[in-house]
Amino acid sequence: MASVSSDVPRPDGRSLRARPRPGVLALALVTLVSLTAASCGDEDTGVTVGQAGRGTVDEIVEAPGSVTARAAATVSAPAAGTLDELLVEPGDRVSKGQVVGVLDAPELEDRRRAAEKALDQASRGGTPSVGTSGFTAVQRRTDKRAAAAFDDARDAADKITDEQLRGVLLKQVDAAQEQYAAASAAAGAALRSVQRGVASLGQALGSLSAAQKLQAQQAYDLADAAVEALTLRAPVAGVVQLGGPATGGSSSLNDLLSGAGGPAAAAPQSAGGGSGLPGVDTAVPRGAFVAAGTPILTVVDVTRLGLTAEVDETDVLLVEPGVAATVELDAATGAAYEATVRAVDLLPTTSARGGVSYRVRLDLAGGKLDDGTAAPTPRPGMSAVVRLKVRQAADAVTVPASAVVNSAGQDTVWAVQNGEYRQLPVRLGVQGEDVVQVTSGLDPGQRIVVAGADRVRAGDKAS
Image 1 (cartoon, rainbow, N blue to C red):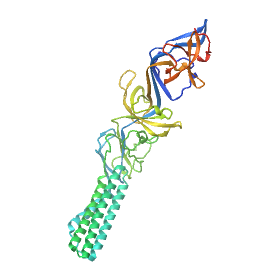
Image 2 (image 1 turned 180 degrees about the vertical axis):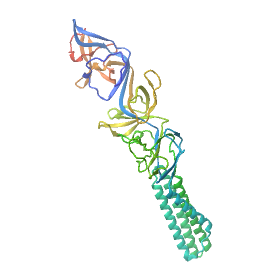
Image 3 (image 1 turned 120 degrees about the horizontal axis):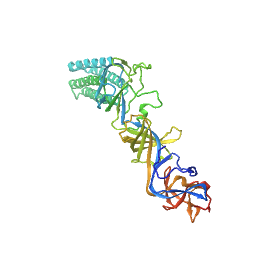
Image 4 (image 1 turned 60 degrees about the vertical axis):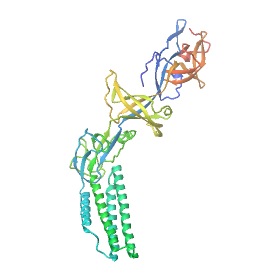
């Protein structure tokens, strides 16, 4: 619970007032509240009388949260093979697109070499020497080779676990197939023109030769793209961590980084990713065989840290973008950080207590220790307590929270009038834990009971 800085001590009797939202805490700065002990004769009655003051009240919503990175992305093996080169070390900073490793996949290399040989033959082959009777057979063989090349390219692309890279390669295959289909259709149309006597056989054979060369070129380009994918590049700029997201806890790194708004392409570690034995590094070493999808390394972008907080449904309507917050970390005792709400999710999540909560995303700024020195930089995933300053009332009429008594659904305050106690209905505004705002029913300086209200009866004499 947050500490309270106020001129008002914590009097007894706070349980008399039913809080409308038990999850809301508050800090308050009150400029004028003086308390005096009231007694009947020489006997202490247990009733404390003070005054309604004027000051500033802050209403705070407290929520659990965690630190998030701007983005995190895992680089996985696009195909089965051997980690030929690993060009980075843990903790290295890399830029987006920087080469971080190279995988050796003999199957893909063999496919490219075969496609290169076929392309060379097609380039030197010239125009096919066939008549109209053999034209259709040659075209069918060319179409069959093209279909096989497209199937191989799709199969290679489907094995790539990086969603973005896989999508690019599949689009490349689709575009190549459409381009070849147009060339094959042009060759077929040329043959039909020959059969109708409106074109020469040489023109038709030229169209067929162009389709063959296009097919060979596309087969090579697709095979080359699959091999090029074996050169591993950093998908985002950031700091290198070997292996995939850490597992073994209640949440994965992907779960913790989900409010950051950056890419995350993680796959479960498969064979080749380390022994998993205690005391043995599970990171993939250079020269190790890896299956398709094995995480090689993760790049974490920590240039802008954020927070995700789980706010209960009873409080979330008070939270808006721009609301300021203070943050405490379990890992940084005595440090306080500043944060600002960036967005509030529209769809709910289930809170740890089983209720409904909403995820609030914040930008995290620097912090300070108790002695005023700079606080340590947090790490993604660290647990936090977030206190959101949702409402503030400045220059308001204020009373201690313990002075408010709910009677038959009406908030009331025991006031001293003409030397006697009288219960007055009041309307509350911003509600703090220790001090609340009174919007009507009381004036600053008016004497009120601030503790021991359960011992007061209407008409009792006040001293």
